[in-house]
Image (cartoon, rainbow, N blue to C red; front, side, top):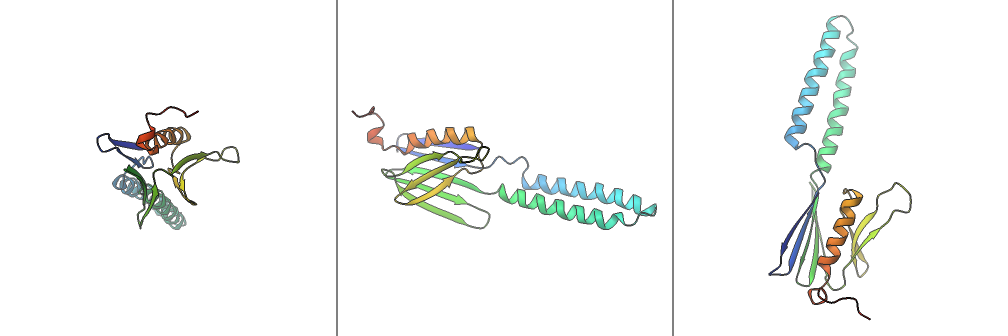
Length: 168
């Protein structure tokens, strides 16, 4: 999911790129607790009928489900911002544990969409300059990456070149 904020008076743009999370953290916890109640309710009913061996397997199943939900929820907490203002392009990657920041000169920054070498693999949207590069929106769908690449190319273009056509 991409949100764009444009300030035409100050010639600045900001793109906020987030994965599309289907459930917030509170929803994930409620879902997990509901699954624990249902699973252990069924397991206890079977244990009372004499099939006590179902209890450790129900516990193991809920442990694996909890770990998987935690990993997916943590991945949903990461996001990126691309800020273009004046002569700078700044990419900030926010993760649940750290924040990484890279700054490029606007005149030299290039936005490229590298197609995958293997069919079925995702393409890579990259901002690069002077041997440094950063991947943008690795969790976006292909059509979202293509649209974002067009918007970023237009926004990164220096303001003095936006009104010019192609040069001979």
